[in-house]
Amino acid sequence: MTCKEIYELMPDVAAGMYAASPEVESHLGTCSACATKFNEMKQTMALLDEWQAPEPSPYFDVRLQARLREEMARPQTSWLGWMRKPALALSLTVLMAFGATFLNYELRSGHGGRESTSFVQRPEPGTAVGDLQALDKNHELYADFDLLDDMQVQQDVTANP
Image (cartoon, rainbow, N blue to C red; front, side):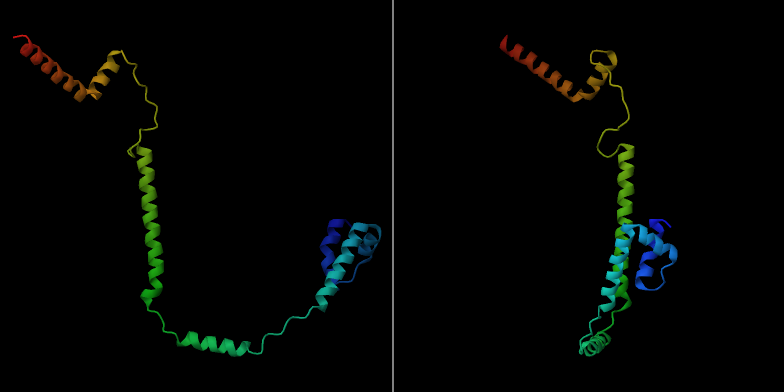
């Protein structure tokens, strides 16, 4: 027999549930590691046999009966009381699922206040497309420059009568 097979049989043999077969006896005689484990297991089983379970307190039954009477006398909650907690949990779960779905949609569609993660090639400044895009972005700024030009012309006219 192998050591693994002996380890599997050891608790039952040490507890006295089965008698040791001649194969087990011969292995324990030749293998010192298994023999040491077997002796330790027998000592542990002997200690467990000596152990006595503690007796419960003499007042245990009296206290248990009093506690049962208290619980029986306590007013019962209505169906709304026990249904309120699951209803709150269900509504919170639905709300979280809706929020997660909405957030996922916003992030995927690129409407979440951030730029889309797709690759966009930006035109270089100085090219026709780049200049047109710059004019389109800064239209209000350039419109104010026209007002400044008009103010400069008026100042020149008033300064040189």
